[in-house]
Length: 141
Image (cartoon, rainbow, N blue to C red; front, side, top):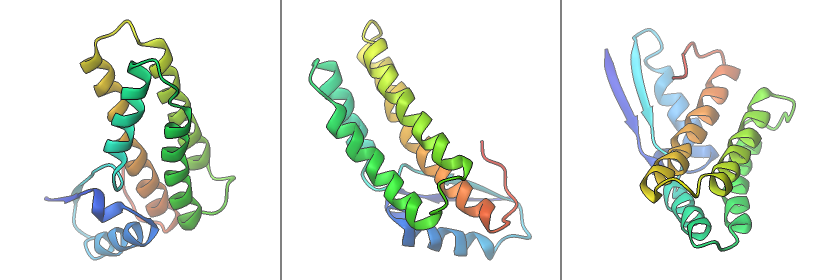
């Protein structure tokens, strides 16, 4: 089994995601383990959102900018907003917002892990949905 890791720049926009899909199609007959980082500068963006929330500052605009970044990529890849992925992405951002307002009793490090980890979830969900549309057999973990 081969392992492929795609960093944030490898999935920074719709063209990059299409490139990842093209690379993976070359290995469709062989089992692969694919690891995908958060898209572009998502980790930095989510850190910023977390820091605003931690300081009791308004984080709505920063969180919306991150959501817009992901939904713009999604719209380019999968414009049919009736696909389940659109609701999944909405729910992820709702979950992030909920954690930011309800988890202040937790340590910063715990909340950091809870919030920033969504970057990888977002990217892998989007790439997985894109691969599914084109019939690429895979399992999202």
